[in-house]
Amino acid sequence: MKDGTSKSVKGLVINNRWGIDKREELSSFFLTHTPTGMLVTNARTQKALRELVNRPDMIEEDDPKKIAIAVGKFWNERSWQG
Image (cartoon, rainbow, N blue to C red; front, top):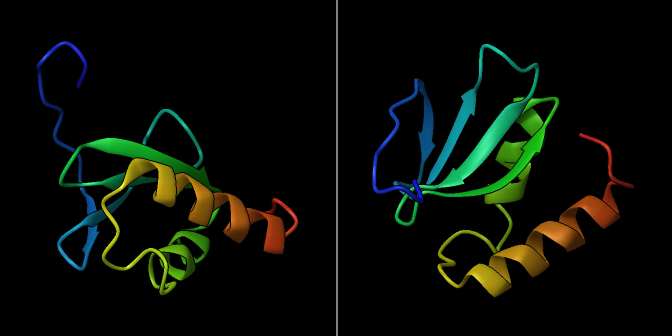
């Protein structure tokens, strides 16, 4: 986190680089880039986030700018529905 602390949550780890978790206080699933701890996006369904991380432009990506572009393309293809 920005203040140097870490937060542990229960969820699913995909390819040792993407974490999907559901926060109890919110009704959404969150996608995190685990090497950096960066929150990437959220969706109403876990299925949407699994589809996102299995795209060829996301599987091994570490550049935040390229991740943001891939996420934008993904949501535009789905008409911004999670």
